[in-house]
Picture 1 (cartoon, rainbow, N blue to C red):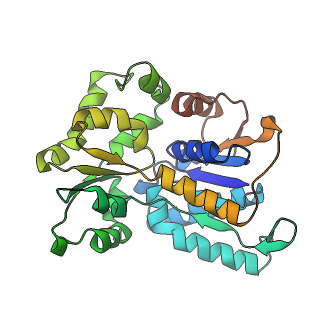
Picture 2: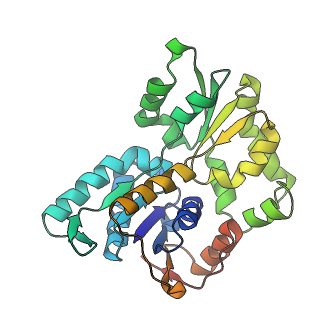
Length: 297
């Protein structure tokens, strides 16, 4: 069973990619809306929150945990893995049995900006990274940029923090499915929203970047508008597909693909926020109608 958590609804994009790759696998999703956004909290707070979220999903049966948030991944990924190893060693979390024979520890998968792919696809070597302030400031991202896009090789990285865009996607009124299918990329919202998005993209326009990495799981839901503003010549990349493929590799390697046909319990959603709002967001963002949403503290 796969467990996914995010500070809100951004990780639903990863959820959607995972369910497409593994239609028979059971998936749990936790939207920690009460603590959104993580980027405004201290590192210690984020670590404690994410550890609790991971433990919650494991207690619900998850064998693989996806930290579907760039901020949380860059700050807490190794911490969570270390803490879960300790809990497993102390028998606070039981080892899972795969195929009723092998035993293994919980796998934890994170999400980070696709800097390596950007370096491979960029022709001009001018790359934009759009993320939250906390991710932009992280040492993890700086190390990625230095490794894959070093200045000595002619690369120029342009960073843009855009926390305000998270709030747009978190809005109950934001309908990605409608904007994608009915309005051909036009946002189903006010002109002010489009103005806000363009404001954050303007530095990339001025720098004439040819690739942009979406370094926040909320931002792929704004891809249509971002692409329209930047033009078709600019490649817009995100990590959702890569994360889903990594989860698939882990599941397949442990021979744990489910063969269940019980559609009613295949997907379970949890939120620390309002359940009615979350149901609307699930439908608006990934087109899935469900009543299987539970409130958790």
